[in-house]
Length: 331
Image 1 (cartoon, rainbow, N blue to C red):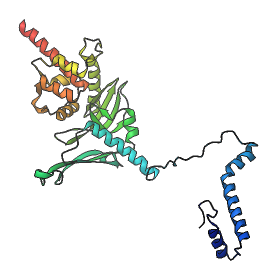
Image 2: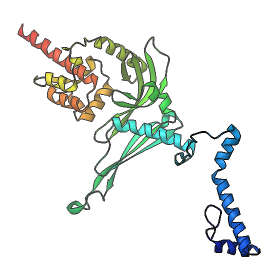
Image 3: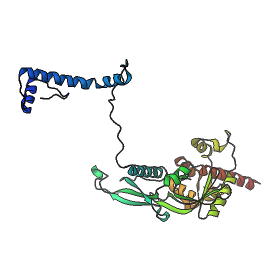
């Protein structure tokens, strides 16, 4: 039997190898064969040292250790497939951070890449899963939400890297830069906002950005006017310890939760919020936009769920409006 090192483990193995090759197998020949095999194995083991000595002229006191770690393997698939998968994962992660998903029966989120701007969209289909529940509830139906998000292939470059992916807790699906209006950046855009339940609404319009503020509207001029008005109404609120804008979420709720007043859609609009953003926030936290107003307590509960700065501004505006109204009535 030949050894793994290239020699022979026994004389019998050497004798059998000689006979198989048609050679004589006397004891002298077997000994020479074993010596030759041992020499070959020894030469193989010391090859690295001999090569090092021939190149350097000496043997270093500490030879580098042989690499024993496993080679690093590339992920599965072609480079193109891996890039596409990374793009899809970025889109899906953004959608999960902004929009509702995960019904009792589970969810599926797929991402497709559009060739034309008209193909961009977000569709949610509800299905039924009959295998979710076990035991006494076996056979009961459970809802599944299936999401299909269609964005341009360069979504990460066109939208995400420009800081447009999440504006007002709405997901920007596509954005095309237009000629700026002074310092106002304007984009023709498509965005997704939360609807009832797992429904997602898709709007096509314009987004205007100025300083750190943004505004969604159906026309470019309306977006530009809206963001200018928003910046003007927000101004530069003092960030001192007494300012409501300097409080934490819980601190803000604690300051205003005992007040008996309502916050209206008009309060949100007057403090700079766009209609699309107001609708999206109301649907996400479960408030009825159509009613036009909600008790401050319910608004603060929604603010705890989704603490947007626009909601904070609407609450402060409502409190100030209520205070001014009481002063007027007391005169």
